[in-house]
Length: 531
Image (cartoon, rainbow, N blue to C red; front, side, top):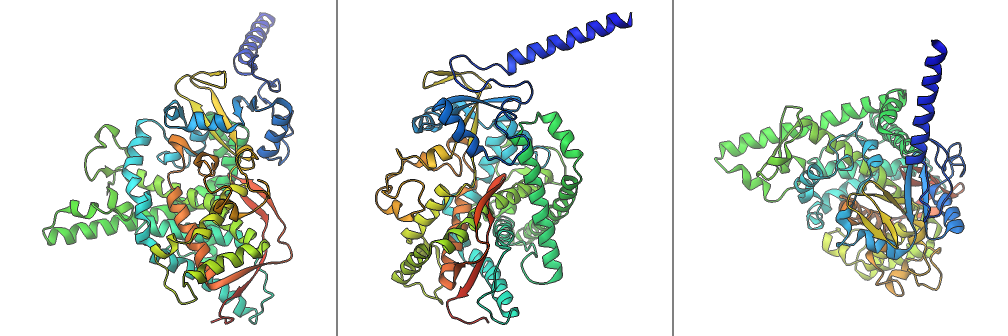
């Protein structure tokens, strides 16, 4: 009897494996690619599973072997990979963008940490939350925050000054922690702007500030590391959840960020109640305060319950949101800050390596009468064309993200490839950001040349820059990120210079976002004084 049971069990397992292989691990015949291995896909064949090989390297190899269109198995999940610009134009343009959504793998990466963040949602709930948040992220809302953002950047610069002062005013002080400094700055800028000036208390040389900053940096780095692992191997949601629960570093990160985020929600709730009381005393209509939304407290009323918002009621004015939703949005803002910190770090790296670019920025500042004492206003900053070119070139040249992925929600055909609902597509950014057919500057697409955007590449197609994604699900906070980045570029170049130092070797390390592996610079101040 036991032998019969074992035989039946073995037969059932064999049938299940066969069915899974036929359904999930079988290459479509008319699309080339490596034959996938059961469960591992192409990860073992391409030496991804047990190495730090980048996806950029993987797709360079596959494109060289199979051409512009091929299939790739990232573990158990398959992707149709498209490398030609017309493919991007087709999928991300307004006519077809509704046929593609965020992939299920990307969504379940974020669900355990921030289930109500925009990254973890799609469909009606995503549209509802995006509508509520839009006033905070639209481009026209940014100028009103200029003074406040410059003040925060100055706080970081003051810390650099103090560091040099403590080192006997030595110009030979090597700054090796700039990546962490940029994470701190990005957190500080985003949270203070979105959360009514909330002070995270992470900038300064005090013991408490350093410990608090270090806890937050390590926590978000841990979250990013585990998210990268889930994405890299396309873990199914159930396995990803178990994996996260078994990781002590992830659980510690959640505890740290839970404490910080709850403090911020309490702060916003207190401000909201205070304003409600004052307006009631003045007998004013509360809706007047919502005409110009400045922070999270201005776009909705924060409820005390933990239920999720009913999206069918989302068209009501002054929507009351559960505390948990605001909590997740703040966590999502920390995630966005961690991602964009890479662009700050790459700016410092490139500027320290290309002194001519640094001098060109300073020349443009002088031509616009911006000196050491000039008060920066949005109108002045918006006129700086070359600074815009530097920002675009960093977003194009630096390996901040490696690929954009989408999932098909309506059938489509791309270059004779028939895509069904549930299929996934992938665009390797290297294929577009370094394409000779797109970027025409004589130095070539591999060269770091901001001037390309003044001449040969001035009228580049917008879809050719995919650092913030594209189409329906492009980065919601891109205007906020670019606003802060440009202010940082201008303010630092107004007051100081970055110089190449020993150990400034660059390279790249990917942890959700791509950072310089080795970043070390000297800093000198324009007034030659350390106050």
